[in-house]
Image 1 (cartoon, rainbow, N blue to C red):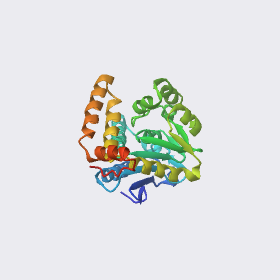
Image 2 (image 1 turned 120 degrees about the vertical axis):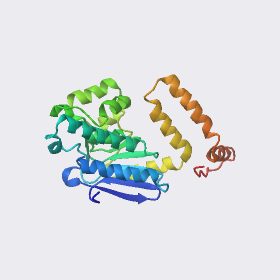
Image 3 (image 1 turned 90 degrees about the vertical axis):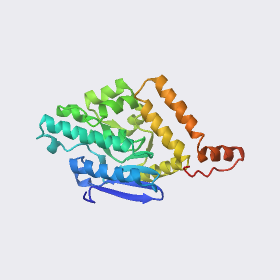
Image 4 (image 1 turned 60 degrees about the vertical axis):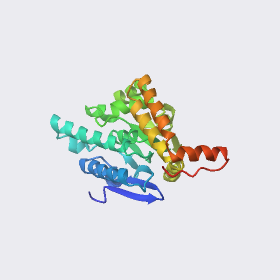
Length: 259
């Protein structure tokens, strides 16, 4: 992978992953998708990294897939691209650590789908979101038709996908697509601080809660609650549970160790 495609910087236990192709508005071509896959595979195995911020360099978070690359594709090649894109989204979703998308500009098509694969989305006031594939005679292929309805509801997701219209950061917040909106010059610092705050909580319980939320969203409520029951009980076999509850009783700050 060329170092110009993706950069990774560390802020204490937080990895800041940046799409580094601002001259192309961070378009998700095959090389960039493969580069991100490599980065997230590495982060999953890196015990020093407790959380991740995903952002884009320049004025775009990610302007979507490479249209010039897709225009020449056969149906079989398009299926292969969708498979690769979906593999990336699952890699982001299953990295095992909290991931916050810091959307600094346009998040269009595959860029929107990339943000949807993260646990939280925070946006600059100037950020714009859209699923414009319908305007190109296609539809989302990297998981957007599935993750967007789960986040904002089926009817609102259909409106975004059926019209292809752009949504401002403020509107995205109202829809429940975005968790928080910040001035552009404060976005990255705020995103890093959010992840640091999350990572100061119980590491093991955080990881389990993330897995249960993600797994439970796709199954029936009764089965999901059984999964929650078992995961809840499992927390009571950890050092962090004892430390957290003793700290509460003793009126002090807990010292979680991830055990």
